[in-house]
Image (cartoon, one colour):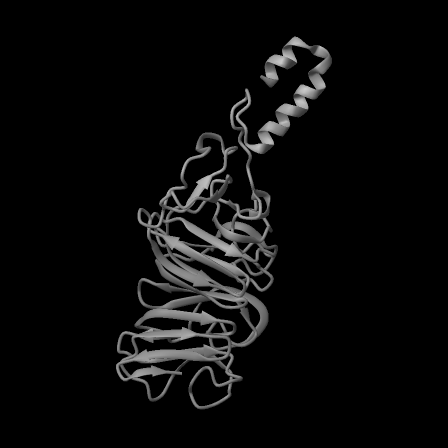
Length: 312
């Protein structure tokens, strides 16, 4: 009706255009269809709306399996129920950094949310996200680690990519500009897992050794020395037979095949577990632990799961 009126009375063309725009804004089909509004953040979708991964707004709707329905101006998805993706593409692993989190799904895609000041979400922007956004150009990840302000992933083929803050070389290039999307870590091959701390990153390799790169002021690289210059990927000295790896802030730990645990890096709070407060620039065994099956590093502490229970 609005378009017909506009074609009959040229004098009312301005009013008709305004009415059409207003109708689309209200979600009324009018004569030009539902429209295709693209969002970038939840706030653009109203008080109860959410910006979905495909860039369209959705609203709450209990009649949908996912409990969300696309808004009217969502292009081809207009008014359809948002698909419930968890069952079809389950989460493989979850990793949380300083102020952001990421999940790796079975299809090899990575989704992140939270702060994004340094590009740690990997979506090509610096926009913080309260809902997960897909990491650009990454569809074949097999392992994931979120650091303080950066993130790394192992890809099929066992190479490593990282994105986010790079002030201490945590992306593997010796330090430089932050990266808003994944960049390859040069010289890393045969990686099976990654770990990420505050200003450094590590990769566990197929031969059960490890390499680390980035900040080495507290011995985080594990090569037996400390230094103010960020390091490229460097072998961890004397580490063999490792099957899992954990890093956080300024220290890292590895579980060996024989069930023992070794740690290196900052030890100001005894997080290395060797009974001292001495900085350790290369792996040292944690005494008194046997049959270790898992390790988790924290800000200034460490947890280990053993056959006898949980030790901290």
